[in-house]
Length: 565
Image (cartoon, rainbow, N blue to C red; front, side):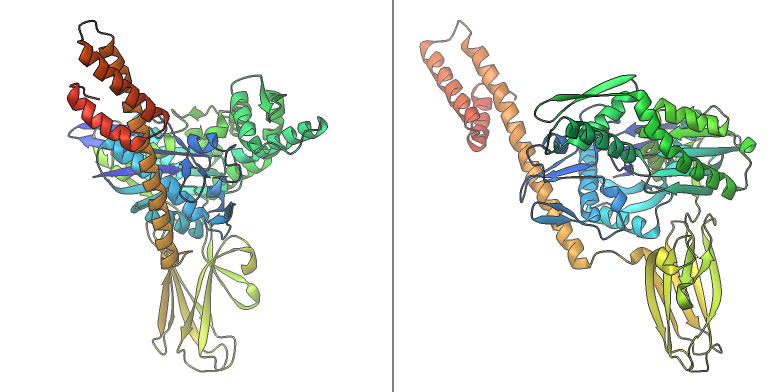
């Protein structure tokens, strides 16, 4: 069995494995799409009916046929109650993410000829607890045990450090922009130790914002030319054009059934990026400010993520930081490779020595309790190193009250309603007394994996209650069971379709071999007649898609003609 590193992305998902054999250490980027090493799987799903499902590029190819069945970008909705509709069915972001993770697991196991033991999954540094819990839930549905979460910037730093073979201490700023999220982290790296000092970001800022703007420009162009309704794949066309303009001065896209040409140049794309720069700079400034490190104390700046392939964006960040940035290796696999190294538990040092890796993170967003009149009392501030613990006394607000509610939120706003609610519970059995005379100790504890436990205790009566936030799942056990069965059903049908395709491929090869034998000059009349009869049978079965008959013919003719197909 093996441990795997997974980068579950908004637009693309990648996976990698780090293997150690004696003094040899290597990382393998799993080909998730085709045979190309490190090829990613598009985080796209198309439902074509009750039991038919397509993932990755296949999902995009089937978009026109099943226009109402395509779903993508669901990572940005993780941890929410948002539902995606496909036909008569509704799907949660957790279920959709589980389908992608299950696909990754299946491909990785086929490629490695072994079973996945567990996984380190990279998540945006600015993911809140609900989003992380939703990701854990999706992994569970997919049959994957989460060994640990790692922030995407930390994973990039690990990947860079491993490939650069550094030993001396360095302050590294990692800017990572994906399709749906932007993260900035300051990481202190030395030898085998990685310590996230500060993090900042925006879970709603990324390449899809650019796609949306280009899509609106395309719609305006189509309206001007009197074309409606809009093609269902317009967002995909916008994304393709954006990617093309990352390497070219100008490009065009043929839109809709009329194939009308829409032309755009890189200056227009740069203008879209320019509108995003103030928020990008704010994220960078917050990370540097919270780290306590001055700009001139940054040793390395790493810029990574798909949208940063746009030259204007890359150089704008360089200019803002007044430095030359590292364009780290392979954009598409930097995160998953770092996660894989952490999953293995070891890293290759600059000396060539293989040592046990140590990564410490921070609480990305402040944690607090909601008190009277919705005021939030911060218990653990953002960027506090984990593990950490904080205890604070709270008093009763009514005379002789017998219970107290503890409401846990995550966010930086002063009022509870403006923050993310992580959970709540009621402590009963407290000592009856006039208001303000009873003190309840509330304790927040975050372990090294970011698991938050909140407890409340009345020291007079000994009454105590606690909640482990990581176990507060968005779905009931029955719902999780149903989703597991649904995912299994989809992939069972998928496996059957794959088997059918393989039989068709083998049958076409059989037909080719039989025709080759028939063309030989030394066959007797009887043999010539028999082989042509067989050719006719195979041809008809292929034409009629008769997979059952083809399977029987393959078994019979492989033996009869001594073929190994």
